[in-house]
Length: 89
Image 1: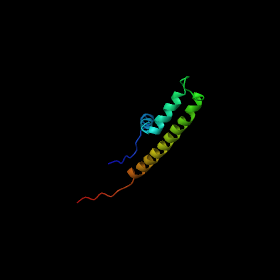
Image 2: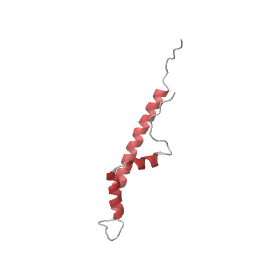
Image 3: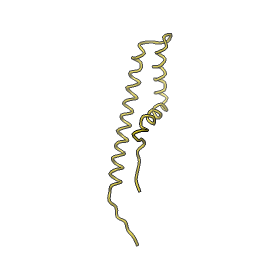
Image 4: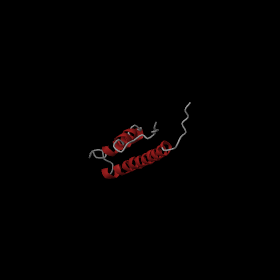
């Protein structure tokens, strides 16, 4: 038997993490506002400047999620390699 509590694999981290982050309404709203700044008729300031805070928040959240998942992986590895006693009748 093996214990596995991690959410991500190396290949699934980016798609799953972005999917989870865009389920938060605030993230969708700020990405929409940043993309709206690329439309010349409604832009309020430089479009590149609008993307910076959104990308920063997405990156920090992704790093936090990666760190938490790596901690789960280490904990799982430690528990899975523990010795146990097996009793038989």
